[in-house]
Image (tube, rainbow, N blue to C red; front, side, top):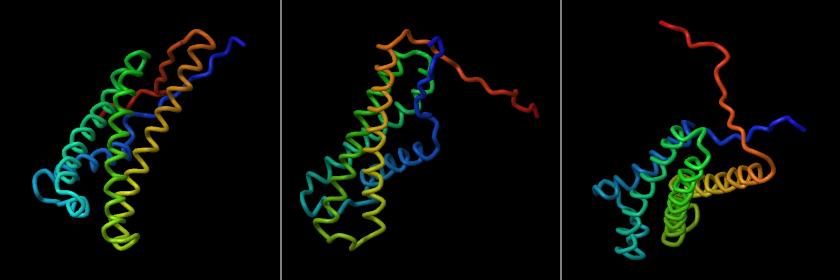
Length: 165
């Protein structure tokens, strides 16, 4: 009964997650600079294409920044929740942007007409949506734990010191 169960937040330094966020920033950056053209969106509406690239650029940058900032909030529950909220909202917008592009690709060219592009865009959208679900789950566990008993912050340290070179 006196034993504490740790609630673990997903590591904000996960290389795969940071890589997906970097790709999510670079795709609209290429669009804004004219290197990449989201043609499927442009065929539906040039305004949609223009808005899409700027929204994705801004919110991908916010999501990546929040992910990196989370490392500096560990141990402070209120700050962690705030940063996770920012990441969650920004990542939800990123997911929506990718799913809109995926829908436009399917609508304009047909399902699996460009399978690699559709797989990557749809995969990035679903991955971002999965991260939003993960944040919601982690926040729910955190709030449940706070209500059930006092919160004790645990810091996990390495068993051995790093090797000096």
